[in-house]
Image 1 (tube, rainbow, N blue to C red):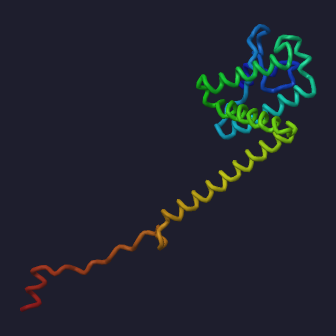
Image 2: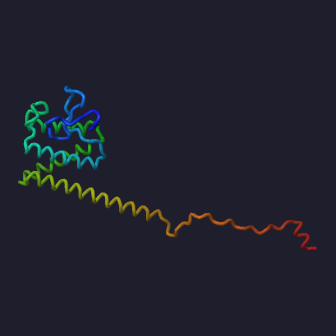
Image 3: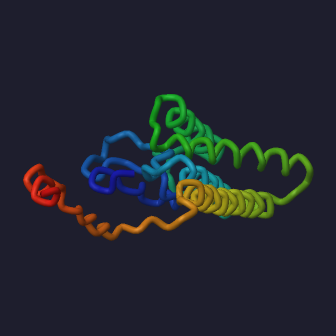
Length: 181
């Protein structure tokens, strides 16, 4: 979300639903997340699902007055449409959030079919994502340590300047002839 040109839609209760800051007639973006790296975006997408589910459960969506969506079903459709746009239209810096959103929704549907409450399902998904990120971080540290070990020579290399070798004076013809006489 570009904070200079967009703002959270009033009454939406969801930070990723935005509209243009200077216009009353600007289109509403139902999945306006911050620009970030892919892996960070995965977490952002999961948090967006959690916020959407919480909003649907607690009911602040009734305050929309039909501008954002007529009801929860329509809102959900609009959000999913904008998620797919972020993923398909080549918006690289928001693709991770879109993938995270869809993965979390997939897990949520699977867990719901098995009778698991949505909050527990989302907490598990976020915890799994955090554990994955921690594992990736630790793996990265190990790879970096292995690389440093591989490029470090067995003997420490001295960076001090070696002293210049002193040359013996070279014998010249004159000096050699005088010594023979």
